[in-house]
Length: 197
Image (cartoon, rainbow, N blue to C red; front, side):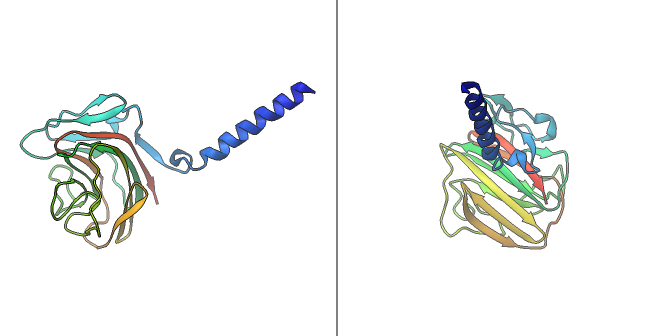
């Protein structure tokens, strides 16, 4: 009888574990491009001179060249949700660029840049530079944060740490790869996942 109860308890625990996993992005059609161990550099092409490397389970850069550096996804996407975990120091300048028009010349004018820059006076962290402002600044420096970036047709929505920061309705860019940016400071990405819609 004790064995029956032990088996039932094990089955119940396994079921509870599986139930808890249903909220995990990996179980809902998400594609992991960079995992929490910092693995996945092969899913990106380097543009620029940033010293990207794996350190303490994250992809880290703290030095670059004279211009912005990027890790550009090898695949292109149209409608999608991106989940990205990132850490920056207070002086950092970074971002997640989506729907790139050009893989080699990447700017906030030929793609959408979801900004990571606590010190920018007009386009701080959580904005879509030149396209969508925030009601109040959201500082990222000194802690791990999450972005959830949804692009569906002309509508873009950005959430930072579960709170919506901005919405954009614009028809400038509809398809292309995405990129992780390094400009200055210390920038880390720990998890990057995408779910095509």
